[in-house]
Image (cartoon, rainbow, N blue to C red; front, top):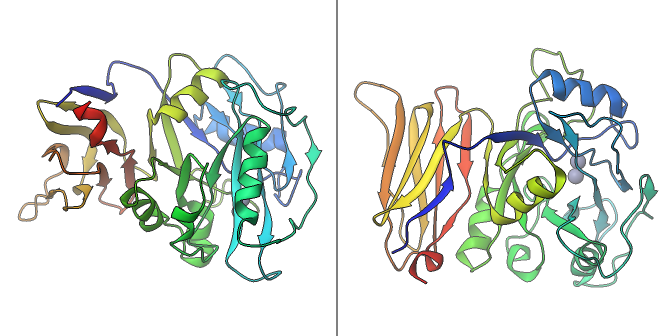
Length: 322
Ligand SMILES: [Zn+2]
Ligand SMILES: [Zn+2]
């Protein structure tokens, strides 16, 4: 079995939020104020992912902060105003040559997207990819998505596994069961945590801003480098804990993280091990799991003492056996 480094403690991480809204759609704050909120919180990048309006800004970019072009495309429902509905996170991918012209800044998409059969979500994904974008399957739990849709549709590179604003609004934040369903059926998709912040004030005690994010390991803070790392899964998601290092050595997956209550390995078709100092409550900062050759994937969740979670991307075991 090969040794690989998924997250390297020696390399820089860049913190980002790929899902939020501004006054370009139904957000409370204009883009420049949203940018300042995230800069003040120490983020390195955000995507101004307004509903059905493509954003492509450079005026907010500095040496330690960038905006990634994108949108949230949606209002695609088989029955208008009823679920399941489909929203897709969209990120401009400068590492590909698009089949068709890229979307310009403030390009407005027609909504609702007409439902013309079960293939309608696929047509939308394909159109976004043809225009040079990566696609994220957003908030499946909130949209009451059917599990089979994770397998039926193709071309999304990630599933939104934590959506912070649906945690405080509708208790439907977690897309991890959908993610595992996709992974168990052979999909190679990553997990993304994000805010989806809309209308709260950023300084409220129960915050809508800064609740879910990703940490990307990239060679530089630049759109091309961040997108390249996203496509390779060189990032993790979090609502609290930090992951410092993740690697496979001698057939074992080892993680190092900030002090946590539990470290749990999720694998398929057999369960991975879980760790907690149950008698003493002493925090854990590392754990290892033996990788079995017949596993399809193995990923890690670290849970802190407040119940916040860090999710690593899966290790695809077939890649270790090549
Ligand atoms: Zn949405
Ligand atoms: Zn949204």
